[in-house]
Length: 465
Image (cartoon, rainbow, N blue to C red; front, side, top):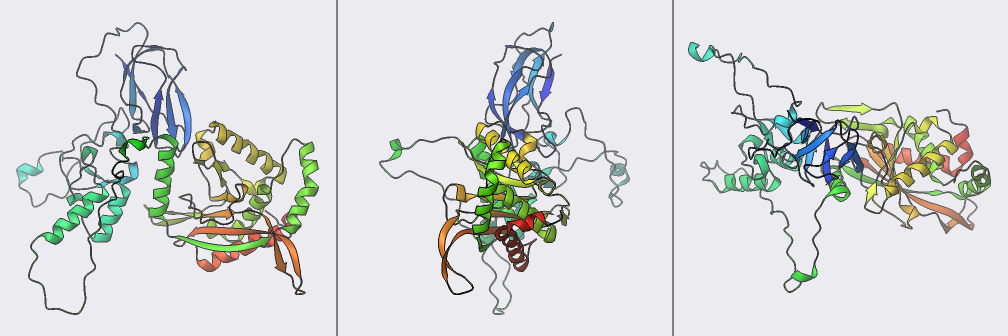
């Protein structure tokens, strides 16, 4: 019997993967551990090795499909098995996450007959259990004698559609879905809301002076080329890293209350200290940038202001305070932005951090990061200054509570305490934070603590971590 090859768990936080490229064709021989498909998970591209030797009989998913972990992606015949073409009655392909967006978008709905659209929620060999119905006391005795009830079908809806339905007070289970597998999209919710508005209403009560909020929304913007320019455009599928970035940005926009706090730091003494330490670092084969100092200052400040090192578990309505400090750093790679993670920043020396920052940045630009190297951040930093930007409003790397933008260090005239105009090395800091988790005053104090440490960098050696 041919065996199914499933998408394995590549890292603890990975729940899905996009099939970027098949490396072998149907009918080709496979060796055990031979790379046979290229998959992207959390902005990281990996080549999956074949778990067994044999012949690739059938690809169950296409390039560009997004499938959940444990979903079958291929059929492989082991050596010695008959490898004749598979009959036209092919096994149903794994339900792609494009049809259910992501695991978080399914939620219990009405009790109806399950159409198999949610089989990806079970492990490959598992079967739905028979469930007794304890709520049928009022039903006739003959109906109670049945030992099974239909499994509740889960409503497939994109997160934005669920959020909009909640805001409008609509039951998502009542909204007809137009997407694959009945997926409910944002435009479906809007259309349903408008249809309810247009339906004949019950006699209105006497006016009270209160006007109900409007629930109509404009339809999504559909792009159309200007007339006469249709042949002067190129369309590229939204796939791979760009698709992953787009999803992360939308999630950040929808599920954080993003607020900005801006400050500036006088880094004159830090610039001088780095210049003195650079020869010693180079003697040990390390290029010393400003980021290790910034990371250490952030680690000290996060210990004093733990709300910025937290996440919100919306499913359980709990604030998660983290007693470890893993800092994600935004790296501009050729194909887009990648955020590798430096772990346990508070436990590492400046040279250790400098070496790890350089190694991760190089791997990110070369596309050689492992899945575990881009997950698990508790706070993030984006170094816009390395490109020359003066100022920015960083996007929070969800589920982090905050991200700090560091900018160009520039000589600027500053009035000192003696009312003298002097030239100092100044840098803007822009802190984006989720206002649900962090109050504005605490965000400002956090920035002031980072600035205090960077302006007198020798204090970093006095702080106990």
